[in-house]
Length: 475
Ligand code: GLN
Image (tube, rainbow, N blue to C red; front, side, top):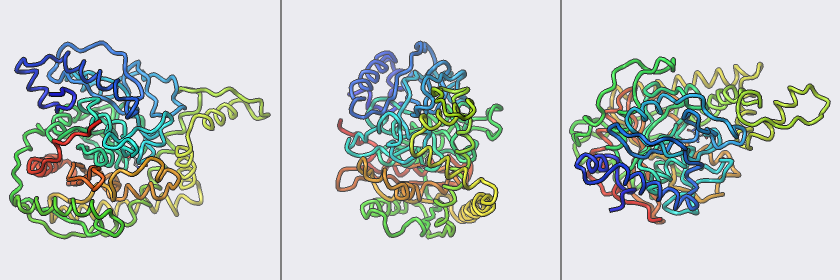
């Protein structure tokens, strides 16, 4: 038995029965992580932290490089944060440490989480463990690749427009974006503050529930954190979905979806129906505006959030050039010019443009209104159904280099994941098959705000009736 391929639940049982020590697990996982990192480029660096001696989950975990761990480097895979050390722990990191978690290291990502392939990382793309010529997805591509390759037991990522679910789908694992407000964002480097959520990337649905239990809950340090009770999410894993109402949104089954993805998702829906769910067609009429709306709001928020990286307080400071301009302006400009990659610059320019006076009403304000319409679509749908099912992404993992020079086609790969962020609702991606290249296909389920239990229950029922979650990438 390869320890690094096991789920957290299984390892927890092995520890409890005395069959294996946390140290043996840690050693096996760390060895694996280092041995194959040259092939996956999933870890950017390993932390230098003392070992925990107690807690109920003394298991290794990897963290996306935008989560703060006190005194450790946090870089968002960007040059501009070079040398920056977090002065405090993120709320989720505090919770993990209380649970006994062994924080392994920082995982690769698209620079500042801008992207869907991890190719915008300043430190080279992460690779898909199922085929290292393909992308692992993004922006939490390092998190997904590390879990799929057994370089960590489970991981945290962040999801602003699909960044947990899409890489989970590309790497054949489970990724959960919780309801906006379910998890504190304190200590997460902000991208789009009204959209960002932290969430688990795991080998199966049980582990997703376990990790959600650890990180959920109210935090006074995040003003958008929800003060509502946290259930034990593992109690939702009953396999029972008789009478559950499932909606199939017609706007999510469109031309251009890879036929193998469509087939796998349709078979999944049939299986859910056989298990007792009632399936019905629904409409989410404003879906076609979601990508445009997102790329206005997300870039607007990003341009504002990234204004703080100017060479004064954080990370890198460029050498001033004697330009004849005031030295401080020169410092800002040179630092930002050298520190940010192309995609970050593109986002900052787009965001600044849509917020500028004269264009604000035409773009930003209008996008806010469309966001409300998209949210209302979901509210209406959830009067009729409990769970909405769709593909996670229109395709399986694409090849490195295939889309990086075509931003629009890259942005379109988020078409099915973005609406959940705009509406603030929880959504999960789980494996539902393979294409003819043996690349995993992802199934997305969405539910109403704070209905994570319904989501996990439905996902678990599907997972337990299929073999996909037991497959491992051979690397
Ligand atoms: N791919 C989307 C983007 O580029 C979503 C990224 C994310 O969720 N962080 O913005």
